[in-house]
Length: 263
Image (spheres, rainbow, N blue to C red):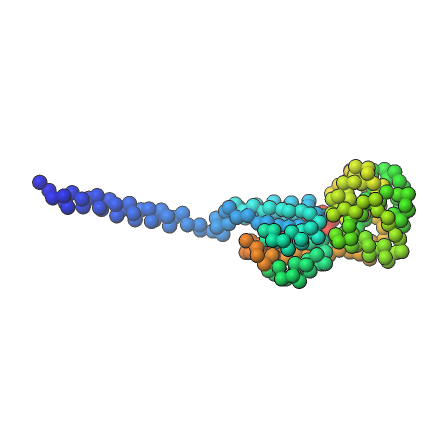
């Protein structure tokens, strides 16, 4: 009768073969490209409310170029976003509508890269379709009989409005001060206000819901938009790639179509 040791040898040989096969299989499943390595990654981008439309398109194209990656977008007023980041919100990228709110991040030691300007935007007057209050220029916004909505001064669009008021001597007594341009635009589109100060890009995005009354004084308060990687970014390399994409010809084309100017 064969010994038990002899009977075990084939079983041991099979076990060794299986172990080797599994090891080879594991090697074969190792990601072989950066796209595979990116699978399942999420990038959190905090962006000014006025960037809602173009950054949604930027995110879609970035995801298409990075299979498996999801870009989460958090849109709000730049001041609110800066406060969220200062409070520890998990942001990878911050795109502000002005330098002042970006300084809260970079000057506060929360930036992981140097802020880089990527677009400019200019204020304009939004009125309801048909312009029922007959607004013709910036001076009309100082008429107390007109219901005017603007951004709060700590918000970039509000700071720009304050600068224009100081330069022109026109004092606006707003019926409401909003925390973002989307709030201003909503009140004008709904007919709750005769006029509101928003960006050129906002009127373009809301075509049909509001009309534009351009005013030359707007050139005295052009907002420059900077973007930065957050120091505590969970995806620092992906954040840098996203920022590079925003500055690329593809990203800039999206911004130009939305009405933004080059910095």
